[in-house]
Length: 526
Image (tube, rainbow, N blue to C red; front, side):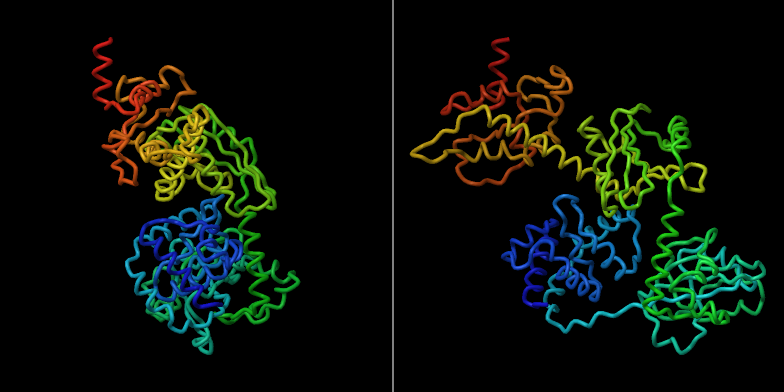
């Protein structure tokens, strides 16, 4: 791949990272002269992020997003995440991973060092292996160990694999039958995080005293566990590809290296097994849970955004999103897609949009987002959205919604006015540009509210729902002097005014009133 082009893309992304901004795929393509189309940027972005990871830096591709989803592409979660040790992220984990990595890119302080080391020889990509590590329940309480710990350590008894095993490799944990025939099989999946290390004290899990001696073990991060419904020996013995796994023919080893064909096949049936385990229960238990307000849990708020997966068709997943106010459903939508990737993210964003359509000035402390997990073994099938992700997503969607509404208001204003021309060219001034900038107006409303600073008029109180969130803004500096770009102080320079007062302030071109002057006129005439 063209190294100069990779460096140019890296320069652009580092510039964005330093200023705390994201860049859309289309914008990035334009910045490099259209040399690579937006849809083909995944390859150079992947290569750049690999270099970031190799240099212990966060992946720069975290700040390149799609215009539609406002998220990185699928490869960020299915390719880059595993390189960082996050193997097989589930769809409902994508948001948190994205926000976490985006923030890490913004906070990283060594991007100049990254660029200066860019021209070092890049190590060739390593192919990760897949393993099966076995444990015997007669000697070791393997189920308890797997379920009670987020990180595991496993003996490497097959010494000839010492130079083959490496960080980032996938490990499937195999529980042998022990004394209960037919109970064995693949019960968990994890990712190797480093070389052999001294094991922590696991003596409480050993059944026979001989196993309590501390040994070096391979560190593994837990990813998924299916101890109650494993992939059984019989499942594998009947499989077209996996029937000749070495562990089925020679069960007395601890560590088994899988061929790429076996690894791919085992990955597939594992994912199918996990998805079947996560299917929601039928509608009746959901309706009952909804009536009993189990979604409230121990933390009650005025508004709830409820998200329910209501389709078992994995090829065309469907979600229901509901907005509740004081226990009453005020909005509900169904979202369906031919691709399950990133659909859940769109569902969550749509839920927030429904909320802001209903009340655009709602506070985050008054809102909860909760997912229905009908298949959960827990007493309460509702799970709250990850708090950190929600804290990031809420203000982002709220800001986008407010700016969208303000843009519509500005368009409406412009549609009612003539455009003045002087000698064939449109004449404008920077004061108008600032007043009609959607971001400025939205920020000013957030600071000052929606009541007129002159007369106190509130559109919502008079026009109800149609007037909610509407107000114009006025630039308090003399507009005739603003014939060049000027830095705006949103708190001091822009104030909300109703349409009538705004027209009166600007009615005479050579005598633009201040807010205080118009307020004094109102006092005299009232």
